[in-house]
Image 1 (cartoon, one colour):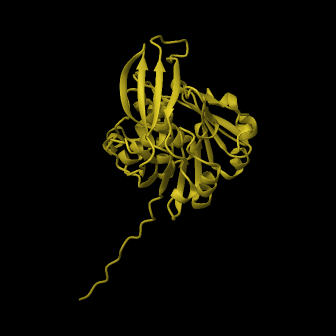
Image 2 (image 1 turned 90 degrees about the vertical axis):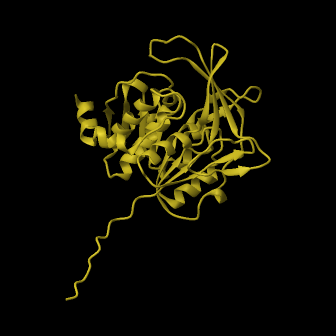
Image 3 (image 1 turned 180 degrees about the horizontal axis):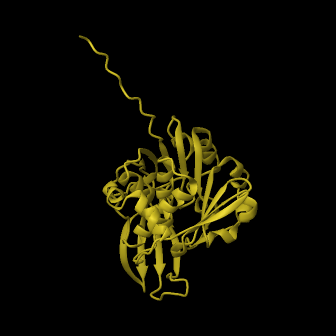
Length: 301
């Protein structure tokens, strides 16, 4: 007797495109170097997605001095050096529970151009440049090849002092990216960055997620907003917390969570990140041990 075999057709796993250069981060406290590590928003986000087994492609450029072992190979620019940031922290903790930080870009690799992006389609795209490497035309190309584009505002409003590279922020409406807001899905901003934009105006065009450290985050859309609960954490290094939040957020979207629930998962990964120095490590077994339901119940509790 011959029997027919029936294959179960599973829907394809959503694909994620991450765009932003790898960096070398140097942490300096009281004039002493206390840590050096792989940096850049793309590296933190990829750490989350890789740990959670979310398939993704990453476009990043590095110079001839790049020495890190990474899961996603970057584009090598032999004539350039890798982007380097110096983060200066003071030793005091202030009323907001944070350390003051002065960030300086001391070296910048080449910009990422539209032709550097893959000739493929993606379900989600993340524009997460930290050193001014994402051009307007690059973001436009991402919008064309991705169903939903999420943008970290630091890729849009950062400028760098011509003398010492100190990072400063400019008003979003003054940038060349402002007219693209109606074509992106989510704009992620920190509470400090939010003062450089009109949240009430921007949320008419796209979803705005405002992160606020230990106080969690807020999801804003055209007709309303919702506060999302935080997770307790013992902060060791705040570097990359917002990036890991975005990685957790898109992980939730890939898994089919609603935007508020995805933001809650983002808060979870942000809290894990601040408890580690440098690039954090995640493991898919983490969520198997903790459990999705326990994460949500913990937040409510």
